[in-house]
Image 1 (cartoon, rainbow, N blue to C red):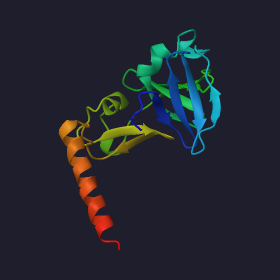
Image 2: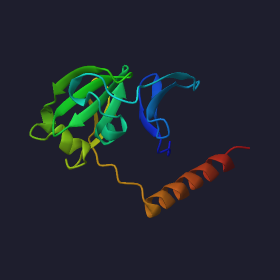
Image 3: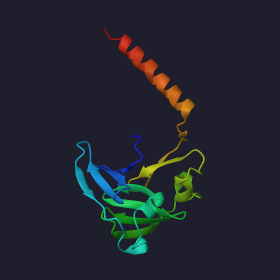
Image 4: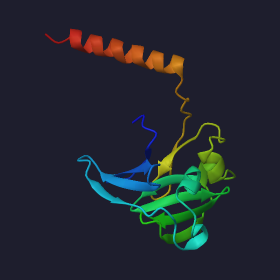
Length: 156
């Protein structure tokens, strides 16, 4: 959505950061109604007393009213949307990703795989997604424009 305040998308809500209040807000979509806001500090667990702002760089996803934070290469710390501690998990990748860590996957260090987000586990794309840059965006815009012109010109 090209908005630096958007942190994550869940099945029913989107998660937004408000640096002014130090809170996270949850909005229902598609209607955009405010579902609630978080506390400004964590309660319980390893983050007790820390501010949300201090852990945003560790956040890797949001789903089912839980927010997922990655500590190190494979420790997942889970808090609810009120920033109350839920649990800590150890994540070990399997299958084609055996031998890699979740941290490496999230950091883009596993060739041919891209981390997209969290659901009941990591959402992984088995292909590299190039970082958007000026030339790539210009090419994409051009292609979409050409496709749009051709599509419109075919209708009478």
